View 1 (cartoon, rainbow, N blue to C red):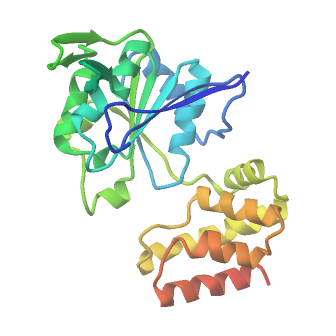
View 2 (view 1 turned 180 degrees about the vertical axis):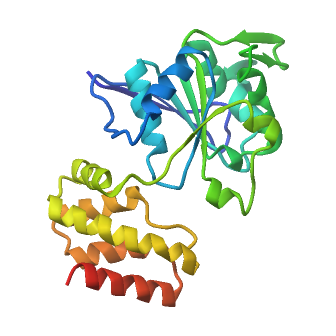
Length: 282
């Protein structure tokens, strides 16, 4: 029986933090590219925090979902942004009728329940928020809540996992060395062509020849990074394109709306990408 609960954090007045817990008898599909599964398992067993580094849409989030299933741990996911405060993570007092009541944030909930806490795109959060994580990534494995005077020690099974896109963030923000060195870093990238074909086929149920042509097109489009394309097509975009094709959308139209248009508004780049689509699907 699949159970999924999605809760809006009571600590986020604007709904900024989403906490998601899930347990499922069926594993989220993930095709390993190297030894990342074994490394993550050892990090979990040895209570080590993990940092996933890689481009947008290369499978970092799906990997965490797969590992949570594999380790049989609840998963709480937090999408980070520049308004994310420490209170959004930890919790805050809220007025309940004639009294105030403490509401745990998603990080505190994960700590108490022994869940895997996944902070997606962690560098988007403010530095004063990221510092809150430090005591959870070393031998202390604890969190001091100043507002309640409580010191919470991590329940068995708790693990902190963060992700970010180094290529994008290098131009804007980055983690401080004092934060980076608290994590075991696993590097992710787009899968090799044959594996990417298998992933697109599995996720979209599209035929192999068309999936192979889509992956070949993506490999050509990824070379446009040298021509000013800020983000190259991800495996996620390929899956979205393949899903449209599998459900009857003409191939070139699906490529236009799901693969080319999301990447750029530059007329020259878009025209060049459309030319590659025409060559790939004559």
